[in-house]
Image 1: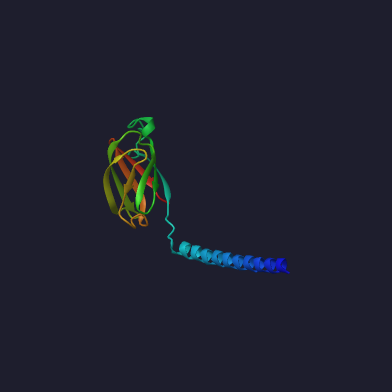
Image 2: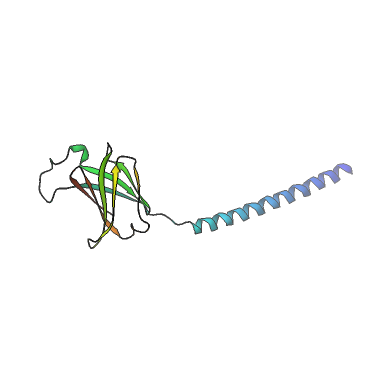
Length: 142
């Protein structure tokens, strides 16, 4: 009789623990869903900036390794991924679709550099220009 009572008590205890665990799982899953709803999804763009030589067919203005600069652009920063091997002073300009200058930043450009920018500018930007080594690189955000 005693064994049956112990078995019965243990079984009730296990069932209660399982109910509590299921309740905790449900609560945390709802908290996770609400946390995901509050998070904003940050837009990210990969922009390839190529040399613009004024429409002339002279591509000898810059060495071959400087023919393009790859940028990763988000709402608050621009990150240089490839194309600027050594640190060099440059000017980044951000233009709207109608050609209006929205933001300009002078910085030292190098691979891996993260450049902060004003918030909510990227939503209006359609063109990015980089002046580096007397060459103008132009990239378009789609």
